[in-house]
Image (tube, rainbow, N blue to C red; front, side, top):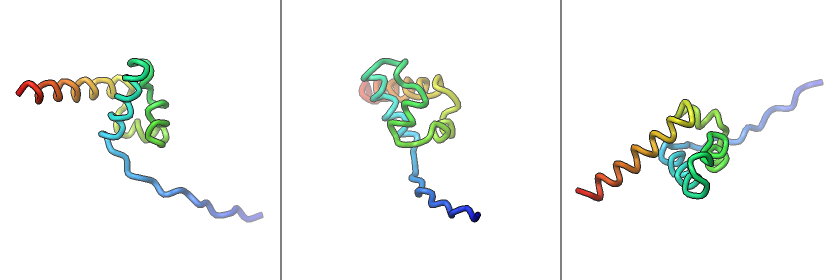
Length: 78
């Protein structure tokens, strides 16, 4: 019996900024524990493996958020 051809959905481009925006929204809503890789992936409509392409672990996401927020503070102080 032949296997029907797959009809994969087109992949959309995902950026580090989108991932961090989603992670920040999750942290705002439920604290750091709420920003797990699976939840972030769901928030950006992607597979967890896609998020792992940009960040190897949840701690890396959190570090990037801290860097981003501190950068915003530095920019505001200038």
